Image 1: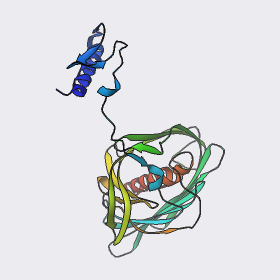
Image 2: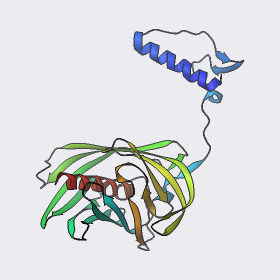
Image 3: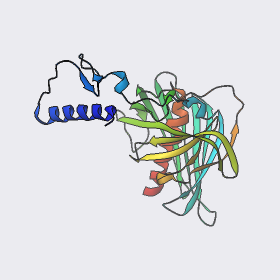
Image 4: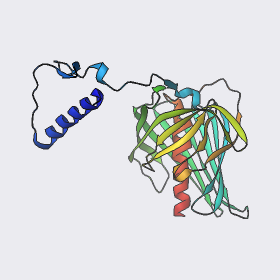
Length: 286
């Protein structure tokens, strides 16, 4: 039997027994498998008994978009509509997201979007706009933002990194929100493999990765393709399957987006994910 498996089995038995009946397994000295020590007399698992890392690391910053305008398209599974989303990454302090849908006769059925601003003082302001059948609703909310856990920029292939924030509403004119409301937002991601090139909507992208994302509103793993300097190009699974990049234009700015600190909030969190989720939910309800 592989000694790594034995160590995990021993640890599992100890943990299960302790939880079930507070039983204690007392071992004097070392634990060995085939003459090799797997748990030392200090109670610690020796490094040679731990699962080995692939040794391959991934720089996540490389696979996030540069400042510019990115357009995505998908078929809305709820209503036989074709929708186009536009992400306008102005800077790491401000970004604009918009969405428009048309029916099978190309008649407009929905438009909406968000403007997200990092106020530079630990707060964020989100201005939302939703338009259904000619009725436009604009709401402004300012939140106190606390980042409890942040993404790592560089991770090992197959390992995960996560983000967790807590927001408290400071001011709002939304009828669906109120001052003092507290929300949390969490997300986990891992890189599963490298893709040399992929063709999406007649455009070939090079140097890409397959990323597994676990988003709070779906609760399931989704598998997306990200490419160097462009970011997301295709969602391959889940409720957003088929969501793909149709065009992009870099602004020429030398500002580099980072998955860490405040910059990734505009690229990866608020507008790109939270906005899409909320807009999709709004279309469903209405």
